[in-house]
Image (cartoon, rainbow, N blue to C red):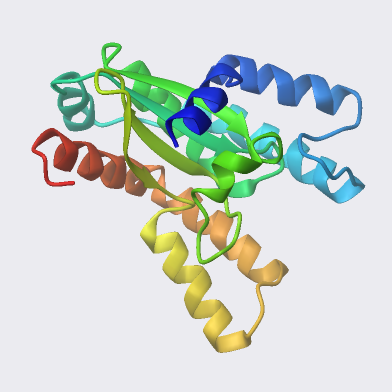
Length: 205
């Protein structure tokens, strides 16, 4: 496992590098990932606009910043993502702002799912390759402590309830999911990641 994570980290991107990669590919009419299609490119373009907006509007609470700055160790949040992923577009800007306020206690690194099959296979969700996945690595110990994702609990429940009622995940629920993120304003991501980091800090995980 250590070698798989180390290999992924070696090939990882910073947040700004990831954004530039996605933007450059879009300028060529492409998306990240093994598959290329007009729909994936359109999703990527939409996500680009979302991330630009979120980078300007997302607020990280003072309580969150304080708790992150008081972490006793240093960590890496290694995120498995792709440019076309709607959940990743909603979550990555929040993580980036949390890391920016952590006083260098946390580094944010991003890898592409389709270029890291070995890593992705270790972090499946119900057998599927759902993203984003946040892998929390303790720098000092060089070990993975836990993981989170692919979306906040409230968003996951929204999807599960819809699928239970209608049997499919169609365009309507995709729209409903984006509206959920819009109303949530990144609060659930902050709270759930903070809860994880607090548990790690006090050896509850």
